[in-house]
Amino acid sequence: MKKAFLMLFAVIIAAAVSAKPSPEPSENEKVRAAFGEQFSGAKDVTWTEKKGFYLASFKLNNDRMLAWYNDDGTVAAVHRAIQVNQMTFLAAEATNNLSKDKQLLSVAEISKDGDLFYLIRVDDVKCTSTYKISASGEYSRIEKIKKK
Image (cartoon, rainbow, N blue to C red; front, side, top):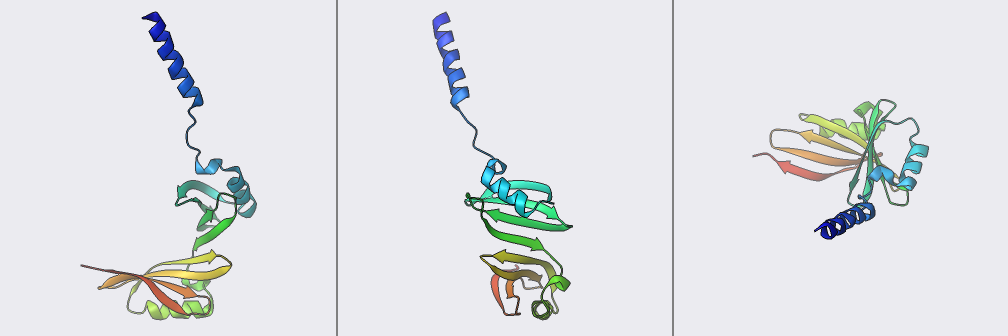
């Protein structure tokens, strides 16, 4: 009985020592180093892992931001919550036209693969729509959710 107990205890200890918890997104050193260099003044940083990306949510210069990183520490995209008056003139004009007679829910500036564009969400009695607007004011609806 004693021998069986000692054997079980040894197995538990060996399993506990060899078992390594899955790493937290913030433990990826390449990602952490890249984030620290690019967003050195970031505050309230939280990390999550989604669809193969490390996602940092943080505040920088009073702006709420998100940054998506690949495993190798390269940034895939950056999202910044902004106001219409922070958009380019043509994009702001398109936003004002799209939100005429609708409620403007959100405006986000997205930098991805060297491109800069905006995502806006508007709401009316029939649906909630998301539009992608280029810096030059060209737009397309990318999502429409009908209300019941």
